[in-house]
Amino acid sequence: MSLFDLTGRVVIVTGGNGGIGLGMAQGLAAAGASVSIWGRNAEKNAAALKTLANGACEARVCDVADPESVKQAFDETLARYGRIDGCFANAGIGGGGRRSFLDRTQAEWREMFATNLDGVVQVFQHAGRHMRERAEKGDPFGRLVATSSLASISGTARNEHYAATKGALNSIIRALAVELSRYGVTAHCILPGWIRSEMTHGLMDNDKFVANVMPRIPMRRFGEPEDFAAIAVYIMSRGSSYHTGDMFLVDGGYAIF
Ligand code: NDP
Image (cartoon, rainbow, N blue to C red; front, side, top):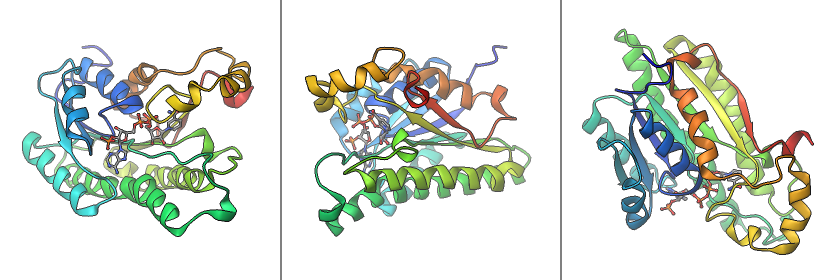
């Protein structure tokens, strides 16, 4: 059997209807997993679902900032498949560049935390409880993965609220890696560099931004959503069972240059 065969695995990818999440979902589906992609926009969900190689995949409308919506999506996904083996909490919003910290409004701060932090915690709690229950019944296996950001480890002017949510994810993941190991559950953060997506297209169409940033990327290209397919498959595979609590930099070498 292939080390990376995910047949029989069920994986949730929040924000799986576009960008990095869709890149991960496509990789997971191609490796045989049944993937449930969650997003707010039903049309984006439907279009994304058509690109997944496995006919057993599905898409659900869910707003991760709303705990009721997360509970409903989780319960329905579990009811459909009977198990959840992995959860990629990837849905997120950006907020960079628009306003100084000194002028940050409470509403902006709260929206950022509700989506990028609370939304991750909610889905991990549902998935983690289910994984613990399965482990106690003799089937220990689980993967909890958060999409963090290089913003969590570097100084990000006018983006401190976003960076704070991502820094918190790094800390939460390390705690979960330690706490949930006993159930066969591993936990990781993925830290993307500059990746082409809806979130960044404005920046990447900006010549000044490209002229400043590209020389600082050793690979001399922006990342693409498909650059996240194989790392998702590795994490979901049995082969990664002794690997936990990591922070995967997927950034073309940007952070170390
Ligand atoms: P996109 O804007 O392309 O994707 C964001 C995804 O999140 C969409 O699928 C969107 O779907 C979903 N989403 C947003 N808010 C919610 C919500 N409240 N509930 C459910 N789904 C939601 O951006 P990226 O692919 O670039 O971003 C994915 C992750 O990667 C984010 O967490 C981001 O912070 C992180 N990241 C991105 C980087 C980059 O350079 N692109 C760099 C570092 C980190 P819908 O609109 O339908 O809800």
